[in-house]
Length: 447
Image 1 (tube, rainbow, N blue to C red):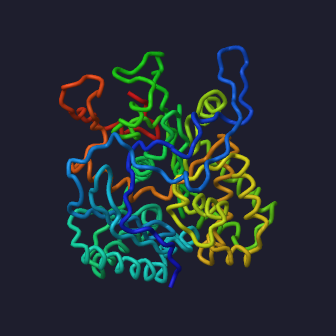
Image 2: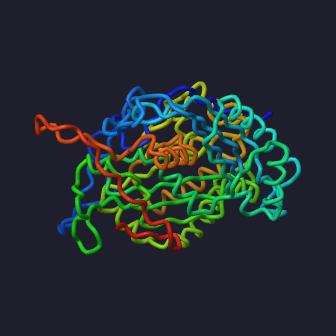
Image 3: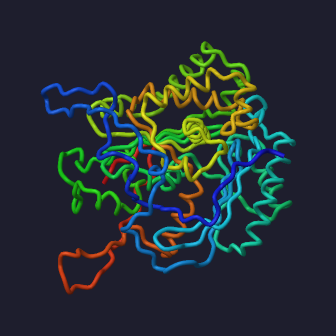
């Protein structure tokens, strides 16, 4: 049976706009940005991330739940190319409380790039994991849920037949989501880890069969140079955003992931020459990102940081922190400088296969995949050299839960207290904003 990463149960998860307590004031610009006399901002020294005890994200204070605590359980399931993940949570206080979780590496996409089909063995592994998920949903009496399948089922010629088999054998009906939906859910799930003073974020999700990249443009100035109505450059406005997906300026989904790249180039013995080949192959795919050059230019002069959600970045963070056993509570929200990121990739690259297997944060299940993930991450960082990366052990599942709870009116992440400066007035909630633009071909302008 595949090894499972432990996930903290019964923990409150801040969903929107928490203050980056472990981060020094401001977000630093890319290494090498200079003041040129034309009004560009000069790069300040890159700060060290805070100690481990300070890197855990804290719940935001602006979110007010419509229910004081507890409530009917919600569930989100994400069946990807490599993993099967389930999260069960209840509305709780300012966010939601995780009451059950499950994660297992199933390698559903194993051999898919060669055959175009999901193999019987891969299907069997996935269905075994889904049966565990089904039992958890029954045990928790979950009635509100969303179950999604991503790249492996999108690409496989027998993806639909596989989902029919899943329904017959488990009773679960999974939906295949498109790449844009996958990118949007990743943004929603990671929104609370965006630094409140950032001008923008390069958010990426390195999966097993695909990788999503999103540029969140948080600059309050529109293309015409005017401030959006009712928006001021302060933390309160940032934290009050109902959906950061409203600020997606450009996104792309690359048909490359840790499984597909490692199957093509090998994952057990990876020399530096092989690694460079993988990096350059991925960089060659970045032409699909329409605003590739504009983002690189923005990083030179603005406060933009990376935000990564994937097994690759959480693994690197665990190794960086020297954890004897992977612990998401210490990993989620960790900051890495560009130097630390390069050092960690080099450290893993210097390990042989057995050393990677023996590392408690990599293990046997990821030993042949982690360097492919590092190559994808290195390609992103070479193209868009942000000075800081924040690590997210959260993503699609949290995004699904957040969107369902918003739609149900369980809690409202844009509600806010009225100003305390005016005494004698009752507190009131702000009216929720509309949904962001979800159409287009990988591009959405802020409105």
